[in-house]
Image 1 (cartoon, one colour):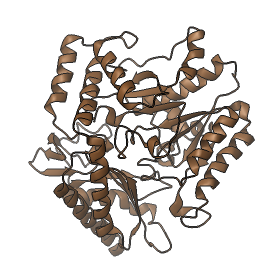
Image 2 (tube, one colour):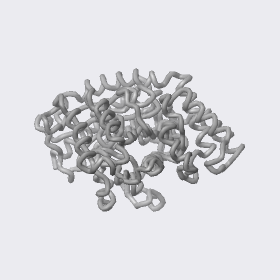
Image 3 (cartoon, one colour):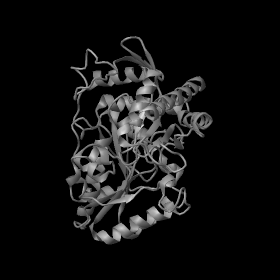
Image 4 (cartoon, one colour):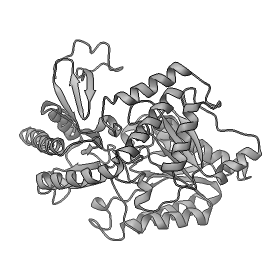
Amino acid sequence: MADHPKSHLWPFVPSSRIIDVVRAHGVWLELADGTRILDAAGGAIAASIGHGRKEVAEATAAAMAETGYIVPTFLTPQRERLIERLRQSWLPKNLTRVHLSSGGSEAADAAIRLARMHHIATGNDSRWKIIGREPSYHGATALTLAVGGHRARQKGFEQYAGQFPKVPAPYGLRSPLGRHHRDEDLRCAQALENTIVSEGPDTVAAFMAESITGSSGGALQPGPRYWPEVQRICRQYGVLLIIDEVMTGFGRTGRRFGIEHFEIEPDIMFAGKGLTGGYAPLAGIYTTDNVVEPLAARGESLMFYTYGGHPGACAAADKVLEIIERDHLVARAAEQGDKLKALLDDRLANHPHVAEIRGRGLLWGIELVADRDTLERFSPDAGITNAVVGAGLREGAFFYPGGTGEVRDVICLGPAFTVSDDELEMMADRLLLAINAATLRQAAA
């Protein structure tokens, strides 16, 4: 794209490419020049109920007119209504305590601090390490980058990342045991136990992982034995289990949370994005009485973020969850997800540069390769992911770039749960055109 006349204003680091969105409705974005873009990614896989819902705007405006800013430690009607709805209709029954932040990175950071504070309060001061996975992504703070396994975003911050051990996330397509080897799930679970033992169990505070790996791995899912074994290991060694549901929570995978596909029982869970459907910055940290009680006994609290639980954001979240419940949108995400899978399979399953199509509900990842038989990747210099995203925009659709640098050339789809059948067909058709354009250009280079 040519230089944009507003590129001196945005983004923060100047770029010749700028997408100038002036309004959005449903699954469509409208640019300043009148171009319409099909939002196949729900923004950053966040816009679950679709853009432009006036009732959410009205609920948010009413809350801000009533209160404005209220310090997060105080209770407001908006906070009360949201927490009651979460506890009654959404959260697992054992997750009774709710702490609110402004977004996923803050929530992940708070979850890590909570795990550490819990161990200190129970007299286990030596437990400070958080074991993460590769690939993974939990946020862009120094602490969350360190726990995550996203090498591209850790670049330049490797000194921080080295503080925490990593174990492999199940990645059946590229398992060292062989493509989709049945024991990949046990291999990765055993790696966790081996790491806990080698690091010293009395130094490990928690294991943090996504229930289903989000955009960093392109909807990677484990085999059926992985999570039961991981939970057994964590319980055996007194390690807290922290589950990241920022991208997968609140209906995205066709269940309320990704943990419901695997019967995971986290000690701490955090989730955002779909909590407000993208209408306001808000995420939650959800935990058990057992985790919080030692802090209460010592008169301690989990430090808040200035805008955590903002009344306007809480009102937006409460209305979004009400809409999801009223319109049965979790079930719709599952139904439309099945249709999207069938369309992707039809267009891409035999494509020479598609290694795998994977996902659940309305979270899908397509891994692209130079050779589908050998799984040889494109050269990093080819920039295939960005090429597909750029080609998609030219075709009138936005697809989300996934991968971590090590896991690269992944395209993600995460449209609103309200997406129509015709719009799903457009997504699949335009994605095929975008992949063809990017890979043909690479072949000609």
